[in-house]
Image (cartoon, rainbow, N blue to C red; front, top):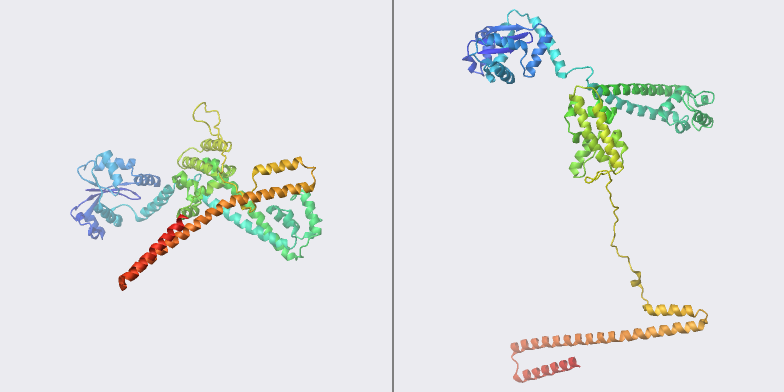
Length: 546
């Protein structure tokens, strides 16, 4: 069996002398306790040294990716092909498969091989002759540095970590600037409170305070470089009649130092923004065209890197930054958020509230394409981003103008949509049912109105007599209508009384029968009681017939 072992200095091929001892995997480490024992197990057959670190880096990167380098291919053809009948022990199973396919050599990879590799590594200095330990250590250090750079894919033009740090610093500077400006306005406001209402811009406010200091100096100073003429006149007029308190020179100097800090930080913020803008155009030009520098940088910072962001689907890019709202909505079973950091993009800000969800979804889909193009593509042009932005803008225009085209026909005419009109079937309340006054027939009302129109010149007495006659007639009609109703009520009451008496009589009969069975009365009393009952029934029948 042959063993392929790669070191930082070169390739080494060992030959196994005693294969029986390799079968005991658990106790194999005992055979490599000393260099003498190790030389009894394996023996160096060939060692190919690397010329420099670049060759070592190329060989190691090829092994990491599971490929065969040119030097390794030559060595295997020269040395191992002579002993083709023997197996080749390899540390990486993927590399063994590639060697087997290209060179038709039988390769082996097992736990026994890994233990053997570990033992060789522990006694490498004793097994490799003619290689100083210092040179070996220097080669290991150089290869480690170069391999770590390769794994990080270090490139000064494609470092997205700089963007992550820059956008984080920009946000921190904004917070600090707000705190400093609030403190400056509040501090100087005790001395000159009117200035804060007249000068609204924060940077201009700090420049005015730094240049003037005490409000008494406003009248004799020139602020044309900082303020327009109209505002300057207002400030000077307000300084003369200010209601602020008097402040010492030491307080004014401290306020001016604070203003210096605000001006310096704002200048540095502007410089940092320009740096971030240039970096974004170099690393992710298409993403910058789609959503802008700040939103693109925040998306990259939130994902960790441009490559991690490229792995996210469009739906994740859409709600990136709104994780709390998403999980809260899922927990409470409510509507999930429609946008996260992408909400601050200019295209989403232009739309109305009704179409923000649609545009953010389409923008996220196109943004995901541009991110993958920037992360995995080779070209640095921003043409793809410009094309996708144009598509989103046309879609936005259609939505705003309600430009829904017909599928059939010519496709040029706009689809017509009728306005929806809600037809409610709510019945109105009729207040006439609440009045307790007697109802007057419509014909009579009409006749009365006609008579009043015709007899406008009739004296008041004649009118009163007519009204009285109408009222009397109405009362008579009502009495006639009420009489048949009263008769019906009386008949119903009589029937109810008769039924009640019949029910009572039946109950009395049942009670009498029960008493007769218990007491066994005489026949005479029973006959009398039965006759009485018959008489009662006859009376009841007669009354009912009447």
